[in-house]
Amino acid sequence: MKSTYNHILRFISEEKKLLAVLIDPDKMKPEVLSGFMQKLNQSIATHVFVGGSTVANNATEILVAELKKYTQLPVVLFPGDVSQITNHADALLFLSLISGDNPDYLIGKHIKAVSKLRDLDLEVIPTGYLLIENGRQTSVEKVTQTQPLSRENVQYIVDTAKAGELLGMKLIYLEAGSGALQPVPTEIISFVKQELSVPLIVGGGIRTKQQLNAAYDSGADLVVIGTAFEDDEAFFEELLK
Image (tube, rainbow, N blue to C red; front, side, top):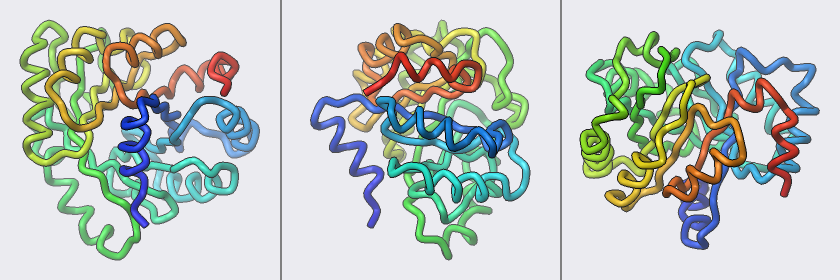
């Protein structure tokens, strides 16, 4: 049953906020996974995202299979490449980098994924992905060879996000990038949210509960946090149920 997207919609209709913890298969050590997941399960997290800009072959499949042993939360793929697709997950964010002009990441990678997805029972969620300038170059920029959208050009960001929705994207994702110096500005989140009728995801550079709440208050339906937990697992203690 394809339920991850409906789960997101249900939470939003009940005015509940969603939090995804992003795990990079290349950074998560197997020996600490059990303890990490115990803390995650005790937190307010509602989803587990798995992926990275560059990930070793089979690393995602191995990690997701292990993750499913430790949690009942939906495990959603956030892939940087076709090689990160695995049937062990519950859903896949089918990311189209609509903030850039590299055809590979607009549609090319997706075409290559079809032959693999055809044989998998995996919920595929079309997602418009926008990279927002954060003060430093990110892995996404390097891998995709695209430039982030300027924080100063708010209307262009809003129009790009809306174009993604009109193209049929079921989710819009504003991304500052892993290890971002600054999260997506609250002004941008607010203006984008006002234009959308689909759920809004915000990630990158969020390292404190204050920043998390600011993103929610500005209109984010689902916030993604990764680096903050990689750097300091004690952050989980601030986000207990």
